[in-house]
Length: 291
Image (cartoon, rainbow, N blue to C red; front, side):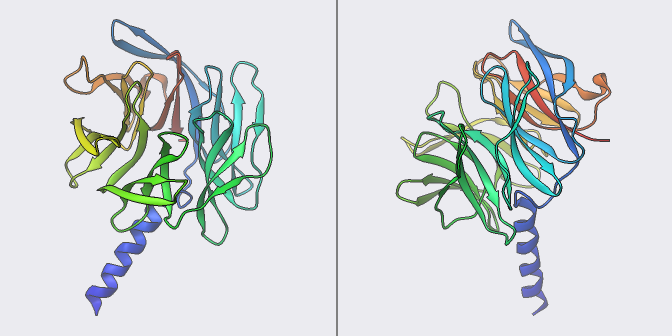
């Protein structure tokens, strides 16, 4: 009996750990200048974009001067759009629930996000950029993290014990399991018909892999730094990864392993987590823990 109780408790802990709204650390979104010379990247001149007490997280570039991110106001998390040139902020959502993981949809007409209702329901929805009510995308699975592949296909981190990476056809509502134990960073790889994900093969061995939905093939890219959950691709095919206070880059065409490009200690900043890179590769948004 005690073994059954222990198993149930472990399952509940795992579900809580990967629920999008379970833990909201105090964080800020910083904007760095990103420069590149012959494959060597550097970060410089960090600016705090958010300056909001509490949770400011999950930045995503809409273009070269606008980002969307999740921010908490009065114990409610909503999606904010920010033009970092004009400093104009627009609160895109203001609902009884909370919204997380904002991303532009492939058609450019919506911002999608995970809605976490007060009753614990967790769904994916699309908000018109011009304003209006959200369009809920029906699903029988509980989506924790996701990325768009095309207008109908979403690759999803599906909550469970263990969690799984699944291909989701939003038109037919069908799911296909790709692999178990993925990380939370899911991305479409630039100039490829593939997505990337971190596979946690064991406690000590993590890999960065790609998946091609047309060939149904998983391909090894490189070994990942253990404990590094947050990764993003730049438009030239370079991957960036945060680990504690350090940020690394890896280009599959030129690099044999991850190359250190920045240490937040240099800027008197704390731990870095989620990353986003502008389409022109001149800017990097970095989520920094508030000390």
